[in-house]
Image (cartoon, rainbow, N blue to C red; front, side):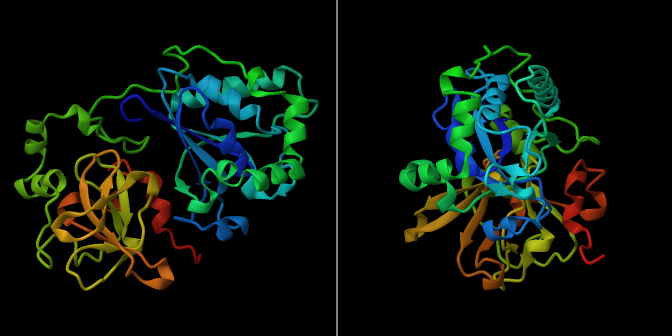
Amino acid sequence: MSGHTALATFAGGCFWCTESAFDNFPGVVKVVSGYSGGNVVNPTYEQVCSGTTGHLEAIQVTYDPTKVSYLTLLNVFWHEIDPTDAGGQFADRGEQYHTAIFYHNAEQKKLAEISRTELGASRKFSKPIATVIREYKNFYAAEDYHQHYCTRHPVRYEQYRQGSGREDFVQNTWGGKENIKVVPVTKKNDGVVDSPAIPSLGSQGAQFCDPSQLSDADLRKKLTPEQYEVVRKNGTERPFANAYWDNHREGLYVDVVSGEPLFSSKDKFNSGTGWPSFTRPVDTNNIVKETDASYGMERTEVRSKHGDSHLGHVFDDGPPAQGGLRYCINSTSLRFIPKEDLEKDGYGKYKYLFEDKSK
């Protein structure tokens, strides 16, 4: 959560359709199609379609919890799927099309369980509810051509939706969007769990510090002068004279201000530039890309989403076999968590990144 927004993540079969259900719904700020729940970092559509990644086609909804309750979002989700189908959704079969609610906190888990129980007790369906409720693990945005497919390719989208059988099922079972039950927002149903600005890290996993609640004086105390110059003044450290350019240990690189996970040693490579270089981030949701026209050049700046730290730049001269990107990052923007310390420091959920997949 950041400011007046929060996240909800749902898997409802084809993400074109579930995305369209939430687009322009009151209180929804943004909807992104992607992949969630698996063990492959930054999977491609082809990989997910193979059914071997563990990922489900999913959407991530950014919403304003003061304007729409999480319970209402759950109702939108139910109205878009067949919750009794355990093998996929409509014409789309396979694990990648299973339905799931990925909860981001204990409050969302409780509300999802209540909502699912009420749906089952309504006797609207003769078969049991098959949609599972799972802890949120990760989300990777799908390729650009999948985003907002219903508005960019309306004719093809409607043909697919009709041909798959989804449209007839939704209309016959639920009717139009006007039949979605809107539950007024209360503190008990907004899907948000309050947390301190700088929470401690525990067994439940690392929580991000919210830098917006830190004054400039606090940041100067938290950071060294060089770190402050880089992350807040968009500075650049010296090449070949920084902490991690030649670091070969296995572990996770997190934002020095907020603690949000950014890069893994598994994706680190020697670019010869003198700065830490990575082929991809751990979670694209923690990365923001912006145009940088400074110094008479046009580059793509990379910032952390929650910490709003200047990290570095991304270039298209990385290893072709790993996607062709080079994230050139300042060491001073990062904190390194060795893999053996992930659990202790609250990042235990990322241990899977360093497991030996050959065993």
